[in-house]
Image (cartoon, rainbow, N blue to C red; front, side, top):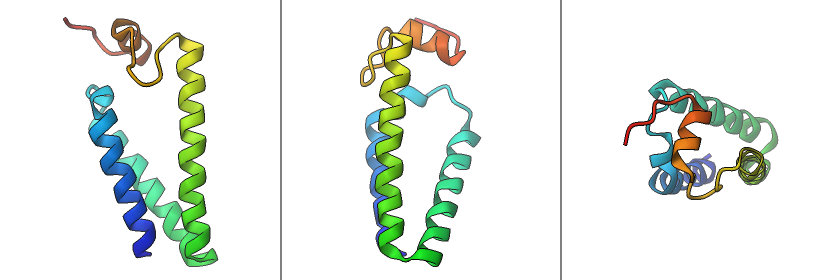
Length: 99
């Protein structure tokens, strides 16, 4: 389970460092819920199917998440990496825009 936790920790650290600014107005519990479900799923897969299956699951979840993210952004007219235009991004997320 150490390899799986290391992979998830690395993804979380890089993801938070690079993309955390785009979740600044999200409720705190969403991140906790997301990572609890992710850890639970990876643990269950690792326990039942082995370490390789869990690592492939992490890779698969990452690839699917990136694809869904890019499709969602392009469908809403948002740049998938810079989240620009910011005012439009905030409006879609339901956040209040302040300059």
